[in-house]
Length: 604
Image (cartoon, rainbow, N blue to C red; front, side, top):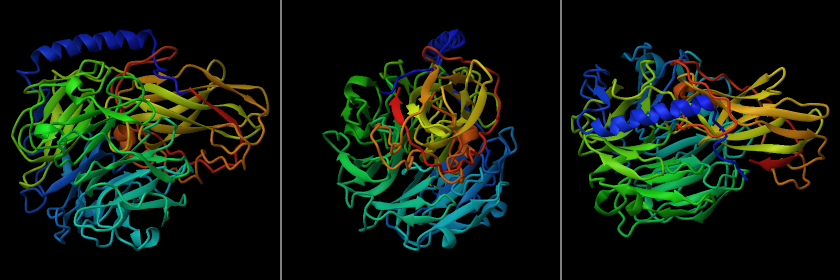
């Protein structure tokens, strides 16, 4: 079983108490003073003749590897009909202070397409984030490979199958446990095809479609969002598929090898309305991932689904969410905006300014008016990250439908700076391992923000023999909230280690000491302890590092193996935790080889 809240210590508890006081003060004043300030003209000149495009999706990530967060905007006006009406894919580079310049020509060659959503990750293992952009009109997709400096070249013809789904949503994750990032692309609006296509990475960034690996249909149509996350905490990545209309969508559970089965549907409300976005995060602090779904409840209110730990979800919106007005909303962002160690919910809206639903720490939410400034605009997507290095969360919003200017908001002094260490939620460690074989350890991490590519971390790593020589081993991002490290082989004895995470503000947390014995016989690497072929399906791939830290790593682990900056939490017991001043250090590349392993596993 996975143990929860491995991170804590006196320092963490003191920081948590201070954050709680700050949070209480915030809740008393938030109705009168916004937590962020709008920066007029932050992204000028805007694309699309200076007016701003129809922005459906965006990523806040380090595109050029300089340690600060840049902005990538996906634009496409006619996705409802699947028509060919291309708009530019736009990249803004950060100078480190939160000032941005449009670098689309140099970075992307002024590419234009019908891109409703873009997936970011290191697909070729070089430590730099690459970009996959499916075309919503069924034209050729693009796979931009990063040279490490933020200059991208489309290599889709060399790396992707030439069947082109009418892509409305895309995500990257290591679905088959081989250490590299795979791709799921959903068939979207105006499509009569299958729900989507699963592309498996060979470790070098070349993909083949996994035929028969996903269900052939879902209830509903117009898939416009998908999310990889570990729904049942078995340390592989499951997939939730969001149907915009006509049904509830579906949750597909992964068997650990990249084959998915529709085990359950999400729990629909009595009245189903159009909805766009799914946001997994642990709202009640029990270590499993719950789900926010925007606009699906009665009166266009958000729906909150609570996970029982096994991937079964129940609608507890009425019992847990108080005062949320019904609006034309387009998404929910999980973020610890008040730095008190739990996930609040920020709702991005088409008809009002963004809204804050404040968490009481137990997963009960109250609407706090006027937490975000105007204007009332047409927000279709948003993402948080520290853009100027002051330790506070800033917000970028994408404006669609009215094609107005995309917006940047910087956190102000009413918002606490990040003082919370990450949380080590669960560890999947072996109880026995063969002599001289490297051993994979998978672990779940939470921190202050959640992005498409996980929590934003500076590092995820392990320390072997923490009370002795203390050898450190770098980890990499798998998807959802999962990371992996490969521990070095040992000839005999007992191996003692801790897994650790450091966020971009310099706050660090480690698990309690874990251990395993050397001398186990061959196994299949699936963690169930039965004999098998020793293929070690859980270990990393061929060194492509698709899981190594990426652009979101340094503030968002979005690039294929980059650590993410997480969901925020105070620690549990047995952890060594530190709080430091803000720092922007990206997580390094994994670069690990696929090894044949055999061992028995225990889950903590």
